[in-house]
Image (tube, rainbow, N blue to C red; front, side, top):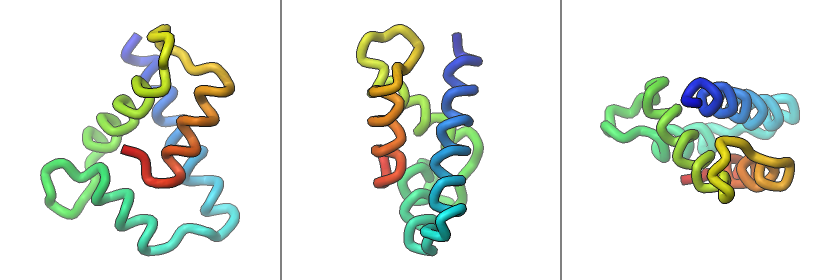
Length: 87
């Protein structure tokens, strides 16, 4: 079950990062906000573990039926939250 969460989180990250990058909309401020949001040890860097913990937290928040899956509506809400800064 954990591998499903990781795969979904990585997919969401890829989508969330790819969409604004393709549109040219990623700013330095967006990157700083994302790192700050996920950087639990406050070292100014984003580890894979820190990012995955944030993605799992957000996934669980949107998995309202606690099925380990997101339907299209839940996935849309997940991605919208991720794009605005999540957390």
